[in-house]
Each structure stands twice: as structure tokens, then as C-alpha cells.
Length: 317
Ligand SMILES: Cc1cc2nc3c(=O)[nH]c(=O)nc-3n(C[C@H](O)[C@H](O)[C@H](O)COP(=O)(O)O)c2cc1C
Image 1: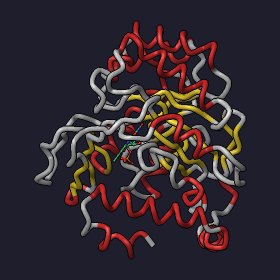
Image 2: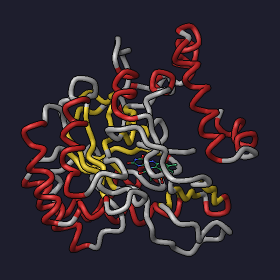
Image 3: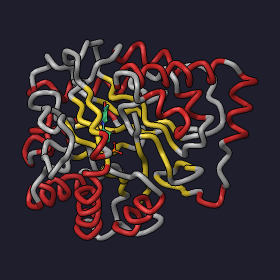
């Protein structure tokens, strides 16, 4: 279906195309007969089920954070056969994000650059979207971030409030310390800051807690972060968020500021998965994200971190 819709969507400005598909999926989720029809179309064979963190994932494929930031369309997305859907990033208070344009298609590179800056309607809105009866289907994660005007010294308070709010509503939670579009956020991956942050979250944890890391960490920074993550008994790592690096790109949008995602991220993300797997001796579940454009990419990501321990996700806007 995507290949049929793509030419139409690509005529629209990227953010409008994103909003249009969200609205369509919202409609699917709101109309039970349509939802049942779409679910039948996209039913996935159950042979790839995996149990992680005590959660039953019906398959290895999930939807990464950033597509459904406000939890508007998760019921419709659930009909597309995903094993898990990650809502967010959600911030405590609503905020507008960065001025537009802030999302760019790099068609020749099969990539995107975004500098969205966590636009969203805030935690209360998203929490209301998640209330009510849960349909059988994908595991639901909520990805958590801080508001732009939260000083870094107070970041822990934002995460604590978000964890408390979403503990009863989500199956797992993700600490996002790796988006390049919130000034200073990625400093929270530094050894001292990360250890302090994760320790401060321990009393609030009730659901599996994952952390999403940047592909721009050096090997040394990654190793230090992993020691801290393992010592603090974090349940899993998502590798990776978007990169501020610019490998050789063809598109005229290549010099836009923001995070690059899509095909050029494949190799970086795969290398990172391999390193995490080795450093954590296979004991830390890894969620692969970044440049998973095909089944082959998904298999390569899984092989980099041992089959059964890694599962893959993609986002296409
Ligand atoms: C438009 C857009 C918005 C995103 N927003 C978020 C976000 O809010 N939180 C987050 O953790 N990651 C966000 N991401 C990063 C994705 O979740 C994913 O980690 C990254 O794009 C790499 O995967 P991909 O190459 O398959 O797109 C966003 C990505 C894009 C393209």
C-alpha cells in the first residue's frame, strides 16, 4: 500500500504528508469495522513472537518514536501488524517545537533530516489518549523527553514526573537522552550526568525502562554509558537515534541542521549494535533503529546483536 501512496505523499510537504497519514490511521482506529478489515489485511504470521522484559511481542518489527508523538493514531497503527509501537517523545508540558520548515526529504539518499524539537501536546493529553480499554495487539511503549525550557539540572524531575504519569498506561518506557534537537539533552549521556539521572529514576520505576542512545557517541563514551546502564539495571538499549554526522550525501538538503535518519544511518547503527552486544556480553536487549529499509537490513541488524536478542523497528515519514 505504501508504494501506491508514496507518489501522492511525496507531492506534499513532508510534515503535511506525515500529518495526513496520521489522520488516516486515526480514522482506521476509530471505526471498528474498518479496523477489523485493515487488521485482516496486515495480519502477521505469529512465528516470530519474542518475550522480552516479561512482555509478549508478537513479532520483531516495531514503530520507532517520532511518528505518533501524541498517541493520536496508535489504535490504527495497531492494525498494521507491528509487534510494538513507541509513542512520543512526550514532554511534561505541551510545546511547539522548532520553527518550520523542520523536516526535509533527502530523496536521493533515502534519508530525512529533522529538527522537530519535540513538538507535542504534552503528557496529560497523551495520557488521556492511552486511557480506556486496550485492544489486544502490539506492546505499547512511551518515549519520554524533557521540555526545551527545562534546565538540564532539573531534567531528572521531568523524567520522574513522566515515569509516574505513564507507569499505569504503558507497557514499557524509554528515557530519550539522545535527540539532537533539544539543546543540551545529549549531555545527559555523559558518565556523571547519566549515572545521577538513572539513580534518581530508580524509585519511580515500575515498568521496563529502556534508554535511547545517540549514534554520535564515541566508542569510549558508549562503553562508559553501557557500564552505567548495566549497573543501574536498565532493561534495554535502543540504538540509535538520529545523527548530526553527515556522511557523503547527494541531496541539496544535506546541509540542513538536525538529525539525519534513513539509509545513511544503517552502517552506523549496525556498528553500534555490534559494540553494545560485545560490551554487554549479550546480556542487554538491544532495539535496533536506524536505516532499516528492508528485510535484509533488519536481518543484518539482528545478526549484529544476536538473533532473538535484538528486534528491529523503522520509521518512515
Ligand atoms: C521526523 C522524525 C521525528 C523523530 N522524532 C523522534 C522522537 O520524538 N523521539 C525519538 O526518540 N526519536 C525520534 N526520531 C528518531 C527515530 O525514532 C529513529 O531513531 C531514527 O529516525 C532512526 O531510524 P530510521 O533511520 O529508521 O528513521 C525521529 C525521527 C524522525 C525522522
